[in-house]
Image (cartoon, rainbow, N blue to C red; front, top):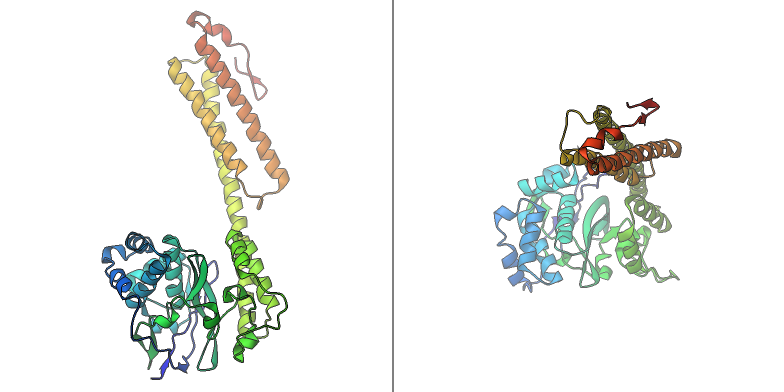
Length: 407
């Protein structure tokens, strides 16, 4: 049977999600073996109650409670997506800009039970992580019937029992024919080893080839799936461990470097690099804005602490009249201590970006000055409460507050 294989909607940037499509190319799908070794797992997975299927968290809870082995958990995710999410052919033929968060998009996909490859892959990855499987969404391009389709596609990598495998939940769900989606589970794209997967899936980042000798995009296009000419083997396992520890910006920089080293002759690879550079710029802007917001939050808390402490000083200036109990006085100054501690904690956690060292240092000094004054008043309250009531008024000697006597 000849059919058109599902195509990718291109991955979006950090700030928005985009989807692109082109006319599907014809290719013969690999045949699914007549027997299914996962029949028992599939039966249980497909009994997932609808009440749990509205969020990846709910799906993950059911899978975790039902299955114990890594392979069974991964299979449960794969088969549930294949049987419950339909490929959105109409969306695949449109260009859409999505400003929603990834969480909202996944929630919408589960609500409509429709999506394109990015949603299939992101759902698989999100659920896998929630059930305890290290997993990542991988982007790249594909080949069917010796034809390289340079439209981006998305699939997944997941670690099962210490080893990495590849999954394509989109192609596992069915195929398109005559502009319509035909739902037909295909086990050929479940838990695939790297050497087999590279025959028709080429990731932009060679890390996700999961091979000691990754091939170039050019070698992929001509059907050369080994690269033994490479003299120094690539330790992808160590690189993945490092990848897992890297923050977003460092990770994107490393991805860019690996893609460049692997060759960028093809326009689709170049376009991916442009997209990554835009993601890095968006990330820097986001971090800068977040740093400014955090700094402004500290200033707001600091000003609030100053205002509140001034109220206490006014009350002290009135020699604690009208009278309060010792417990109430102690509680008043304790509240001021807690407020300035919160300001100090927020200040200590400020990111380095966004605010110059001089401005940061000035704010730090001002916070420390008010903190010292608050502790001084806490000591005074403690002394006041420990003094006999007849002698307490003698404690109100002249006290300077910002250059002015309080009494």
